[in-house]
Structures are given as C-alpha cells and as structure tokens.
Amino acid sequence: MGDRGASNHSGVTDFILVGFRVGPELHLLLFLLFLLVYAMILLGNIGMMTIILTDPRLNTPMYFFLGNLSFIDLFYSSVVAPKAMSNFWTESKSISFAGCVTQFFLFTLFIVAEGFLLAAMAYDRFIAICNPLLYSVHMSTRLCAQLVAGSYFCGCISSVLQTSMTFTLSFCASRAVDHFYCDTRPIQRLSCTDLFVHKIVSFSLSSIIILPTVIVIVVSYMYIVSTVLKIRSTEGRKKAFSTCSSHLGVVSVLYGAVFFMYLTPNRFPELSKLASLCYSLVTPMLNPLIYSLRNKDVKDALSKLLDKKKIHSLNVLPLSLMF
Image (cartoon, rainbow, N blue to C red; front, side, top):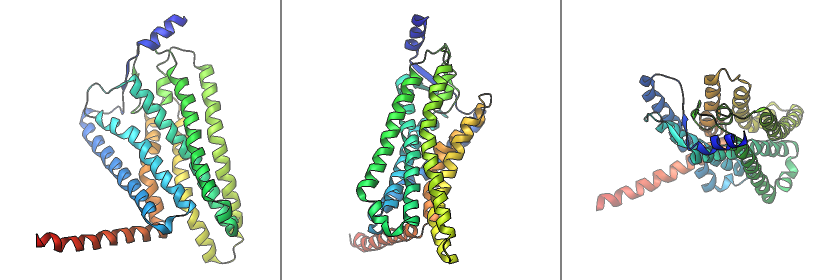
C-alpha cells in the first residue's frame, strides 16, 4: 500500500486548475473583471506604500503597519491573479507540481501573516486610545519591527507545515483541482489517503493560527469601546471611533470571507470559490480604499504628493517646449 501511495505521489507532475465553471462566452468578461480588480490592487497598494514612505507625517506605528499590510495584499494577490487570468485564455489550464507548491506556500505565508498583522494593528489602536500618554513608550520602533517580523515568521512556519502536510499526500489519477488557485480543500479531494488524521491536524493548526489573532482583536476592541464610551464629548468619541473604523472594516471583510469559505460544505465548491475570491482579490482591492477614504492624514498626504507631481510637470513643460 505504501508503494502504491508513493507511486501515485511521484507520478503527479502537474495539476489542472478548473477555475469557475462557466461557459466559454463568459471567459472574456471574467478576464476583464480580474484584470480591472488586479489593476486597482496594484494602483491602490503601491500608491499607499508610496504615500507612507514619502510623507514624514506618516512616520508612525499605525502607518508602518499599514505599509506592511499593503505589501502583503499586493504580494498574495499577485500569487493568484496572473495565473487565474492566463487560464481564461488557455485550454489546458495546467500548473506544474512545483508551481502549485510554490503558489500554495506563498499564498498561505502571506494570508496568515496578514491575520497576525491585523492583530498587531488592533493592539496598536488599543494602546493609542486606552493609553495615549504612554503610546510612544509602548509602541516603540523596536516593538513595531518585532510585531511585523513575528507576523511574517508565524506565516512562514504555518506555511511550511501546511504545505508539507498537503503535498506529501498520495494523489489519485485525477489532477483536476476544482479551484482557480492551489488551495487546501480542493487538493485534498484528489488524495487517495485517509484524510481523517490530516484534517484533525489541519483543523488544530488553523485554530492555533486564528484563535489568538481573533482573541487579541476582540479583547482590544472591548477595551477600546469601553474607553470611548467614557469620553464625555461627542466630538471626542467620534474622533476615537474614526481611528478604528478602517481597521475594523478590513478585519470584518477578511475574516468574514475566510469563515464563510471554511463553513461552506464541500458539495458547494462554487460558493467556496466566491469566498476565496473575496479574500484573495476583493479584500486587497478594498483595503487601500477603506484606509484612504476614511483617513484624513492619508488624503492630505495624497493631495500633497499629487500637488508635487503637478508642480514638477508644470516646471518640466516649458523646458520641453524650448527644445
């Protein structure tokens, strides 16, 4: 039996990404939709990182975390989107075994890192609102760097474990992954191995990842709400809540989509794909919009950057006319 399993595993050289089960006439529409969303992801997240790096007023812990959030969103969406778009134009829709492993590893690394980073951002807002006088002491540059590095480290450890567990399974004759990227549950369906132990370990690992981050976020906001309600002035309460609303919106979109995907029964794969689409592409697109539209500092920094470019263009134009 072991030899058979090894033979099945070693015989797999590539997978087929089935993608969305729609007619060929909708492929162009889906391609354009993916292209539009991915273009907005690139524009929004690169723009956000540029604004944070170029404006000295945004040299604070909150924007340090936000810059890393934009980097993570940009990276893990880039792991998924280009391959998904190319598959709308090819008949084979194949991805090599190594390519599938790489895509799975990188996507898992950055999506887990984002969960821990959002918890760090919740802690940052907790300190800013509940202990404002000690904010600069508690949220030192060293601690911020440690929190971000810890997020990436946890993402890396989780990704190594999940990738090794998933791709050491024995696979049957079918190579068709019923998804638009390499994800755990669709790949598990191809396995000839008894998945009971694998699912228990996978569930335990997911719980170890998700529970601490959710607890930190929930407890932080419990203290934040308690503190804000004690503020006497309406303007003060509004200002305090406005600093958290963007983060809370991002957390709600990401965790809502993740929970929906994992609670969707296996017999509804299309619903699972829609949920995956939300947190793999829609969330990275919305995050810069949520933070820029509801954040005065970001809007002011963006206006300042655009004014600089406008002035530079006006200075260059007369020189170009002279030559």
